[in-house]
Length: 460
Image 1 (cartoon, rainbow, N blue to C red):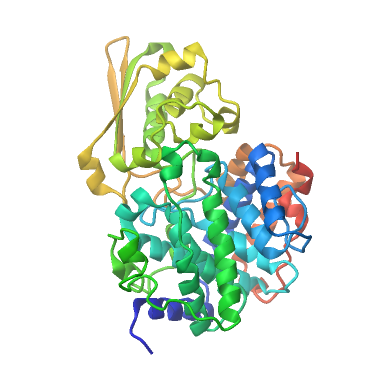
Image 2 (tube, one colour):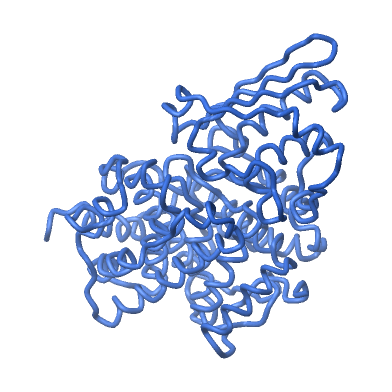
């Protein structure tokens, strides 16, 4: 057997399926699933979600067993495509500091689509989702910050992770799994140029195409087609060609560590995760000093430079840009006391009061903060008040990071806040279904993915 890091990674994914799942990993999986359903339900009524459903149907015609958020059942590749796109629209799906990608849409979307009508055991579904997290996050960490500055790692590393998730769901051997990841890697693509060209509405296509390509890669490997074996480390592999500069040992190092799913971040704000630390810092200042918007004379924000490469919209011109505008987000938070779904979907971009406050916000970058990236996301917010006070807060980690996690009750409250179309009965049903993955006694039960969990009635 070749002594490739990729070979070791494939063997590691197989070994995880043969070992007991730690209770902490089971609990975290249940949280990840609840987060994914929250993201999908939250975005399901959006016009863009309808566009994604139509696109998925056009590209994968016909009905199928796999449920789609707010829509009709489709074949697995189409459903996975649609759900990955829809669950990413609101920017509230989970994230990861070191890998700089959104792992849940990559890992969960293909597995639940493939599970529909296939009689997969709950343990098989759990293993497949854990594999998607494990591979996408290890590949993303290895590719590193230079890669993430030009490429959307959810699309690049995500294609490999989706192939691993789909491959485990389909029961591939270790060798086939390696081929599936190699085939997925050849389809890895996702340019940040779409942000520079104001094409924010198409950003959700990145995870959608990654998931579609990952599923196709797994089926191709099952059919006997070979993939690039050194898909990361080869002379014409991802690392060499896509500006990799992260630690390659992330691929196959520290294999005894807890599964990577335990290191993901569940997002506290409905916006780009690059902007969370200044949001958290501002919220802390508001709570500590109880000032009013009219008391503010200026707001100074110092942030790590990478944040503005992804989320550098000075002022939004349309709702799709609000997630990426720090001035809009902070002005809204300071004026309204919160930033919720309504503020992202129907922003009052021309409000004189909001614009006046936004004009008092100055955003600069701090090169020293960049040195801590990506393992920390430092930002300092300093607010000058009319009474002469200057209050300041530094935040390096985000609410929802592994060091500051949500508990189960808080996640359920978050779901209701981010998905107001959901009724009590549906919320209870989804929470109960997700919580079942924390119960080892249900491992051998058939994993039934009921269409009702996806809210077909929400379609608008």
